[in-house]
Image (tube, rainbow, N blue to C red):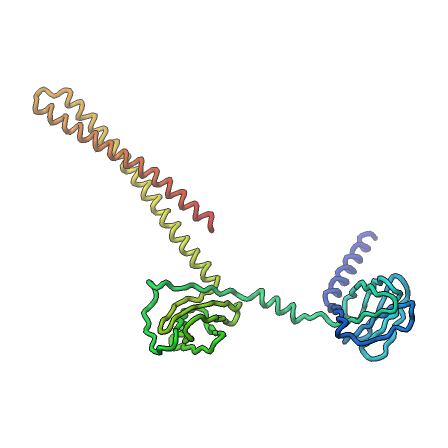
Length: 325
């Protein structure tokens, strides 16, 4: 029995929540005194709330007293209220109830509009949130392509874009040449130009450019996703660079350490031969070879230590780019 009752209440809650999701919302807009209609409150012991609404069959409830409601015209309700604060619940079929607190003094009135909440605004905000972002990058003069401005009374802004269908709006008259795909020549008046860049599926972005007569400037318009991917590629390239250096340094450290050990062993062997030599010539030869091998052993050992610390440094740099990912 308990199981059946619990299932019944769960299904009831689910039905109620589903039904409430389908209901529309109302909004209350208070009309300022400068726009309100002139209404005379005749009863000195009451306050008046005038409601204009495009929603039919509104119902009004309060916890204090019963409300007398007049309907002089379609879509207009006059509520006779006790003076002071009244908490009113407004209901209508197909809409969620809405509560509003009104403070109206004796022989005073207030005027409001009740209308469906604008779903279009909510949907528009949702669309705006889904729009991608554009990013403007200025091309340095050292990297810009040479361009000769023919008209002496104009300036040119060259725009490279991977985003299709870019549109330009300015506070001045502009002319756009799009003869090459992904490249736009924007012919401007010399001086300061405020330009708004637009593209379908992207939020507009503004830019201000000062270009003298017969001068030109070059920019790139990329999507934020492209910038992120570009930065990720750069980080990956740098990470791989340090990773290669780490292994090269480690391998160099191992090889030079092994070479140092071999040279040191050969120096010891020649030193023994130097000690056992019985002629002046052999003594001098073994001494030179021993000193040379020992010196080379020290040099290669120093290189090995340096390479080892180089591999540690490269490892730390590689891990730095791991943290950025």
